[in-house]
Length: 400
Image 1 (tube, rainbow, N blue to C red):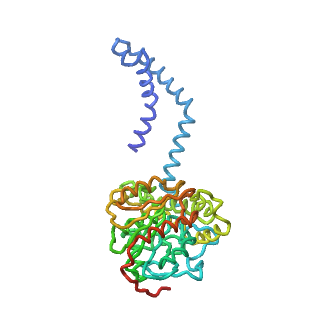
Image 2 (tube, rainbow, N blue to C red):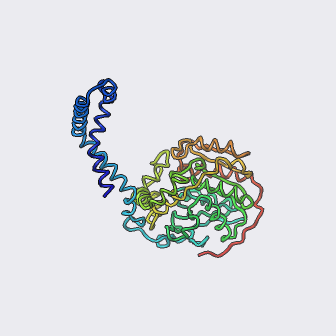
Image 3 (spheres, one colour):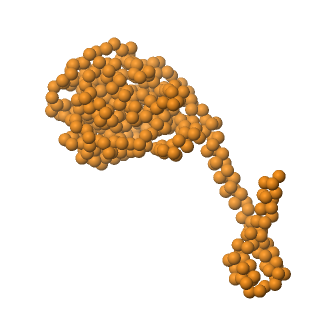
């Protein structure tokens, strides 16, 4: 009752208030009139005139003002309830489970409760472990695995949530615990994979976001790393999600529902070809057959949702402040026309890691191992030939 009274009283007095405001900007303001000894009737007429002008103003601009308020109200409503109307388990028609898309040479190994998909070529004491970039798969290494296998044992795996590895969604892990997609957790999966495959020490090779995983692993477990090779490493970016209090607010509003839907629309197999070609200097180098082979790995349940979880699990990026602590042989590779991660970022990285080698490949975009595989392998071969012989033999273990 009291609230209704105050609101109605406010509405009745609002024209008067606007009238006072109008008078305040006119020569004959109420205050000036009062101080100059204006009689009460004249003051009343002045206020009435100002109120009429304010009502005329409201009448002229009522529609646009109300339209703006309506839009703001709709946006406010969508911010709170819109995400709840979008399921986070939206898949493109025809998606399948990971193992349903497995190749004859596909293998799976259980790491920290999740199945990781990998392929293996070659043998020997020298071991390469290959990390794919964001929204790609181990297929991004398909052109260089066979040549690298002449140098040792090569293991390419799909990072969690990509390719044919598991795509956990919220509810699959302890809500109170850390997301398995968090950057700080990635080294644990790298070492866990090596443990399961009996690899005591390896050359870690990563592309783009996979390169940042290699850098984090080298910092946390240097005793398990013989050397590192990173191509187009994404080591500077801070991610697309807000941090701190804003991140908690975003999560509280359950905006991840809307984010998962958006990422599924962006990275579902309907747009896979477009996303892949963005990484090329010359997209014509990616044939229809190659594109079909790559797109196959986007036909997986929850592929967009998992990629969104990577974005949602954003943490403060500590690499810019810590990469200089890497004391391992390092080869940095970049395309001279990388429009995803600027070439200058690899130059900066080479300046941070003491003794590192930098190779910039001409006429190449963000995917040197795909677009210029011969130049890529040549750079790796020259680098590896400078390394001492492998110090730790491997103990092969069974996998499914």
